View (tube, one colour):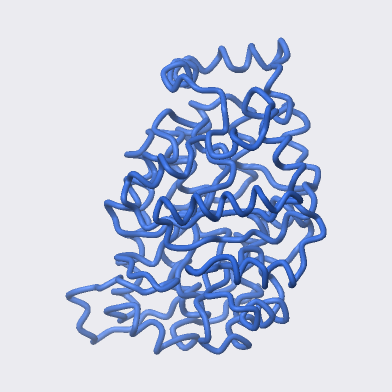
Length: 386
């Protein structure tokens, strides 16, 4: 089975297991997109327009995948994107994923809507960044910045593409947003997944631990709705300047899709950007992230790090993204599937599978390290007929 008719790539086995283990409403929450899900499909389809050129007679006996991004050194050019409610997928939750990120020396973003508080996730020792929204009540945002600073986050990720939450038809059909009071049909669906249900009881919590201090609501979805209503729809470039003044660590802007916005982020002091359409979960229809990456990389001209998010499912996708100007790739659904399937070890398996494919493609392309790939740039690729 393939979600949405999209090839799950190197993560197919994990995705199948995750969908079998999770109640339908959580599986659809991971898989789904906004409106007609056209953007979700475009993210994946964009990679099919490029091939990686095989090159021989080069010494590729050793492949070095270390890279630098957002001022940090990573062993692999991978970043675990912030995923809301991940702790609902498996009891290992966000701390388990962070432990794998630490073990494999990759970066990770901790969602505002993390089931475990950022302080708990930070105990892993992973290279973490706190994903935040700017709230109507700036006191909440200031407190989140103070917490991120206190628990040693290397930076913050401000998400800018959520002025509203659009219709996500799967969530509407499944009643995901009303899980705080499950219907009879939802209860039947939950009971059909005994492994997940037992694991949920073992987890023993029904709060969004990262934000429960900011709401009097009870239950995961009620808390999430209450705090989501606080996200400020008037957010503008002056607010980004305010954040830059308030935060002295790395500041990354997530949700950039237009070259002009990339330039303005750089001008307002951002240390990096994440080219993202929220995994197809916000604007629909929108371009695929890989489609807009070259124009953004051209205007930025190496002034700051660019991570591309959305549709990465194969090692060749990573090579393609880096050849088109990305510093690293962001993985959301893949690590969520891994966590849902097998907990922390599933996250490790997802990263290992992608690393294995990346090493294969790098070697067959005659590229011994990330620096060589950057030097080759678009010459490492070949445009394919549509």
